[in-house]
Length: 298
Ligand code: NDP
Image (cartoon, rainbow, N blue to C red; front, side):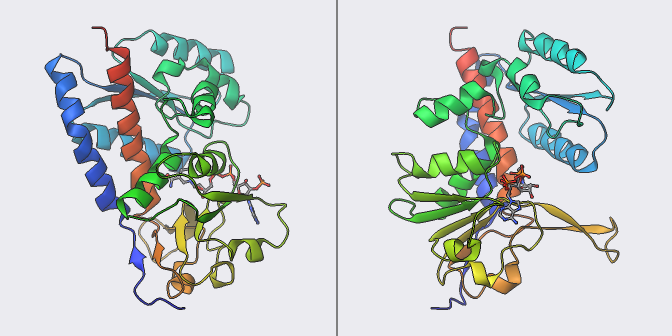
């Protein structure tokens, strides 16, 4: 049944609520003289990466937390970067380390990530963190997938027993989201189907979804033909499309054609203003969590 009163999930507002909820933990760390600190490593001059790093820095500043960005030229070597990460591992000012991805082509990203001390894995993407997440033991969760769960939680969207279809199987988005959704726990217990570029009958599978999560990286890819009436649609995609009417010459759109699906869905995240702000809030949450763990005996 078409729904003309879809809930537009306000990621900015929920993100503020999450940040507010972190304040007691931050205050109690500060009372012990500890300011959660994040080191951000940025390699090269990819414009979206630079923009994300700026946003992260501002968010930490707004929460009176410590963050520092370390910039490397695009032609830096793997060993230069790894040596620097080892230094950050032993720098007590930083409880979290984040390497902004993607790295320039010549880097082995996984090897770089594996150099981060898992106890300082602010992005929750170290194999140790991902392994713990799969096993259901405590670990920093990958920020964007965790942010998606928080959006569902704060919007009172039940996942238990629902069919969730995740389109995209990347290590940082699709795989961890799918894992979190089928875990035996609150905000989990969904039946999950993972789709990718080789999936046959993608539209038909997506139309079975009670909760459809798009993490593809293709502007407006998901239209009404992919969406069941009353479905919840979470759009992780952030794509720049040329728009010469804007000052920047581009605008951001998601993987979902918002206007085409809006009359079919029961709830949907907009782009921008949906999943994006949550990713940064969960990065703050992870840094606070790591600061608590690392300083527990101080
Ligand atoms: P990747 O490019 O790593 O993965 C894209 C996935 O989509 C792959 O699994 C790919 O399949 C699948 N895919 C591509 N084309 C199709 C298709 N035609 N049909 C079905 N599946 C397809 O991207 P990421 O996971 O890193 O990012 C996905 C999107 O999310 C991007 O727009 C990115 O900018 C955004 N993003 C947003 C964040 C946020 O904070 N909101 C954070 C991180 C990412 P296959 O594996 O077969 O190649």
